[in-house]
Amino acid sequence: MVQKSLKNWSNKLDDALWAYRTAFRTLIETTPFRLVYRKHCHRPVELEHKAHWAVRTLNYDLKSAGEKRLLNLNEVDEIRLNVYESVVIYKEKTKKWHDQRITRREFKVDEKVLFFNFRLKFFLGKLKSRWFGPYTITQVFPYGSLEGTGANGSFKVNGHRVKHYIAGEPLGEEEIYGI
Image (cartoon, rainbow, N blue to C red):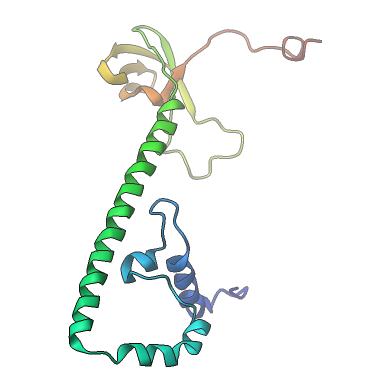
């Protein structure tokens, strides 16, 4: 939607925000617009055709307006409670999915490990590895933390950032492809 020069992005910002605010979110099971304004959004074309209906609806007495306002406030509370419950359910499902995919690793003192350097982002290159080492484990802490030493010094790291180091000669084509 934006031109190649990218100079007209501010003209498209309102449209992009409208699309974002009116899109259905799985996490909260509604749109952000409905969460804020207690009703589904009407597109600008729909508003033109309902202008007469809106004028007729807004002309009512104060008692019925107060009752309607109270009902609307209760409806907002109900919507927010539903959103809260759906967020809790979604988080539980996500946590369960995440916990199933965690690989459990057991490390012992004097084992060799490779350390994953997640900070190496810039100018990495496609084939350069982020795993450094080998390092030797000097201490294993409860809950998966490790302390190790190597050529670059010592470190203390979460056990999910290291993997076992397998020493030996690399496999040749015969072993890999079964030639």
